[in-house]
Length: 456
Image (cartoon, rainbow, N blue to C red; front, side, top):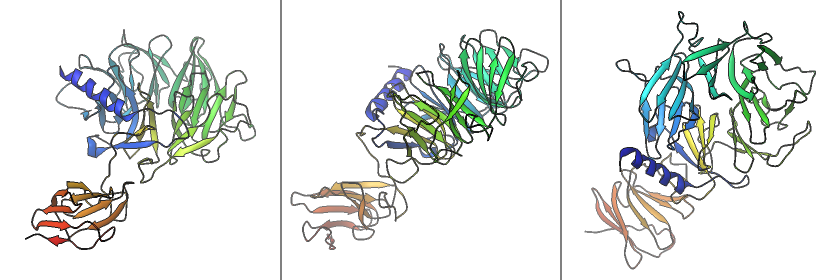
């Protein structure tokens, strides 16, 4: 078995163990992945999955590939060909080829063939009118004809043909009615029509064949106007509904009436929306700023101006069902119906609603009763009541209930460095200390008898 096959096997085993997301009402179990697990940077701005099943994470400091077991990071290297910048904005997998496309903050477009491991970069060339108009890329999405649409921060939107390497430019000088060139996102509607989200100027519908555009901005006097003038993300679900994420919450766009219907949840309103992710049951996950992940119960619903959409939140906290942060930048539903969330400052969270075969008790501060007092564990034993005794390297013994709550700590009774632990046939617990010999804790005498006996 070669290395790629081994990594693919590891990935499938990891995914199959972790389960699937299936319903709105259940709690989500969350597994965090961050610097401690090998992620290059906790500022994760975009996620993609390739044809081999690997996950790709664009961060503000490197491109990370995850095989289900470990991360490999691609950084800019001065002395060899590779990615042109470590400061990234977006990553997507090519629709047909074994290629990921990477948009950088200020160093152009990159492609990486993960089958041949070949890199190519595309940068602005003032002497070549068919080169990319600017190097600041904000979003990449497939076009309806197999090419790529690329939005930029200063020069509008580009249509890129990977076969020829040529870029066609669409900006306010070429498209009548386009208010400015500062764009966050683009969505191909087909038939030569685009939706483009502006940094400050709302939403525009662009006719790329006739080079015209119609712009929509917020109007406080019109309840059907767009909620905010910063349009951060665009998404079309399986039913064809167009979702718009703005700096002032969520809108649904009706192309027939050209009206904007507002998701009427006051907890979402006034918050920036960064991404959408449709679940297999038709409900919608929403990446928000400072509100975690919103779960919208929209399955089998039609939308009107007065539609009330039930909404719940998966938020930051210390329990295994909580996120590690509330500023969510990107969401991905993988090929196994698991959800991955990228955070601005908190790394990655893997979300599942099935009970995982393994759960983790992590180290934390002493007053966090769901955490260990020391991260290095050297001995484990269950007592007759099903309570777990954990021998640590430096903090003695921690005792946890079957519900994984820390019930007691013994920093000195069994030694500070407890290297071994076992239970005899009478239910007595034996602990071996690195420096202080063996200690026995007799069964009986209450739930937590205070006596530890040293063994000569």
